[in-house]
Length: 183
Image (tube, rainbow, N blue to C red):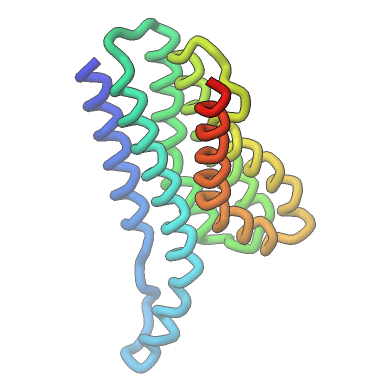
C-alpha cells in the first residue's frame, strides 16, 4: 500500500506543479505590465479552482489511505482511474484558460472535474463496502448540474464552481453530523 500511496502523492504533486506552468505573462512592453497582469486574471482564477480541487483530492487520498491495510484489484484500478483524471486536470485547465468563455471549454473542464470526484467517490464507497446516502456526491452533483448551464450562461457556472468547495464542505459536514446523530 505504501507504494500506491507514494504514487498517488507524486501524481497529485506533479499535477499541482503543472497547473502553475501554464500561468505565463503575455509578451508585452514594460509600460503595459498592469494590463498584462490583468490579462492573466481569468487563468489565475481557473488555476485557483483547479488547485483547490486537486488539493481536495489530496485530502481524500490521505484520509482514504489511513483506512486501508490491504486492497483488492478493484480498489487499485479505481485509484488509478482517479489519478488519471487528476493527471488530465492541467490539460483541461489549459483548455479553459485559453477559451474561458467558450461553452465547450467549460464542458471539458467540468467533465474532468466531475470524473475526478466520481472516481474518488467510487473508490471510497468501494472501501466502505456500503453506500452512505449523501456522502461525497455533492461535488459530482453540482458539476453535472452545471454542464448544461454552460450553454445558457457561463457566468452562473463560474459562480457555482467558485462556491462549490464551500457548498461541498458545508453539506458534507451537515451529513456527517446527521449520520452521527442517527447512530
